Amino acid sequence: MDPEKSESLSKTINSQIIKGKSLISNIRKLAEIDKEEVDIKPTSLLEYLSNAIKFVRESNPHLQIEIKVESAEQQIIVDANEILADVFENILVNAIKYNDNPVPEITIKISKAELKDENYVKLEFMDNGIGVQDAKKEGIFLEGYIELKGGKGMGIGLSLITKIIKLYNGKIWVEDRVKGDYSKGSNFIVLIPEVKYNS
Image 1 (cartoon, rainbow, N blue to C red):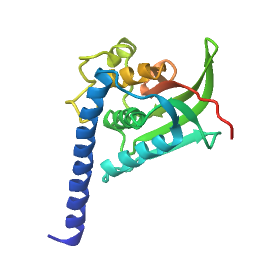
Image 2: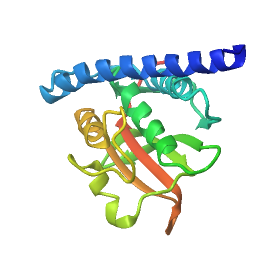
Image 3: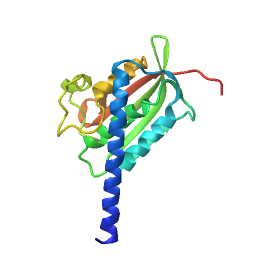
């Protein structure tokens, strides 16, 4: 086997090992979530987002993926825990999985939002994928929902992501990236309660 093919095979094997380890870890976490045995604490959002982006890149070594983060803040603390990384990973994996473009593009916009006198950190995951039809925008977050196309992947699923976000007292929903045209891609929006801290 020539060196180039050997390196390619090595990358593929490594990415599958990473995905397999993640799946085992996720199964353990899901057991905790179902029992609601999760500790909520002040958590560095950008740290877990960075880890999720790194994981997605390493899991797809053959893909050119463009991920851009837009945030005015260098430090963002939210009420969550380490499972937050799985939330981000799942959204990013779906943005790549349901994408027919040669180069999947994802822009993550981070801002602040206030809802019913509560302060949240708002994350918008905007992609150039196949989008979600209006009739399916609520259903995709329900347990037992059949995926948009293809088979089931190794992710922990949007219904479980919804459970996690609810444990954080947050919210998640999906909109069109381009209003009124779902085929231009999705905008998954996540609200997580913000923790005030002294810098």
